[in-house]
Length: 333
Image (cartoon, rainbow, N blue to C red; front, side):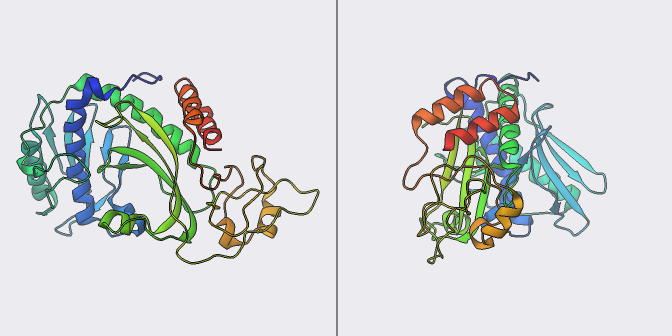
């Protein structure tokens, strides 16, 4: 796999992209059905590993242990593995319909770990044919999948480096099968009013957070992109004011958990960190949430500008993960 960033254009690989997206939905449905529920639907997320898209270890339906279901994007096959050592493989090539693969994956899960039923209706996509009946999506070009996997791997490394210094609650680099993106969540520790009442928004957006994601392109935006800083709506209840800057002589104050909804906005200059001791003594837990002062607070009412994101994309295209993550941080400010 190349260390660079392959060109990923939906115009060129759209048919294969949609097929792969549908295959990931089967894994996601299994996670929803078998994993213990977590806040913000985190149990439903998949992971991008050195092999491809995978579930976390899931309880076997028959109680015999755990299983992992994966899309091996190197061998181009679905894999069902049991903690007891049993392994079943389902080929994704040549151009096998999603319905065919779905039924074989569910049959493999039943043989290895016990029968399970999923809701086969696809989610957050433009098509509605049930996954186990889908013969519309079959195109699977291994070369294009390899290019996507190389780019996604680089994006996951950037997101992991971006997330690493955050001391508050955060998610791993999740692979979301509904929107077919990679994303990290940084939580402030405060609740939030979900901006809509549908099931996903009501359950996934009930906490104040910043989300940074990467998409490989779709029919609406036809090229890969990072999307820094989705900031959820205002807290569910009023919160006390965050503190003013520490006394003169200490380093400038910064607070990543602030999202423009508290009564006392932080100062504009927030890039330098002050000592962890000063932070602990000067910043209440409800405000900082244990957050280090490395990420500038988003400006109230101002999403990242197109100019800033454009600069980030240029830098991200040529730098290793740690430098690219730094560029992503600067793009949010």
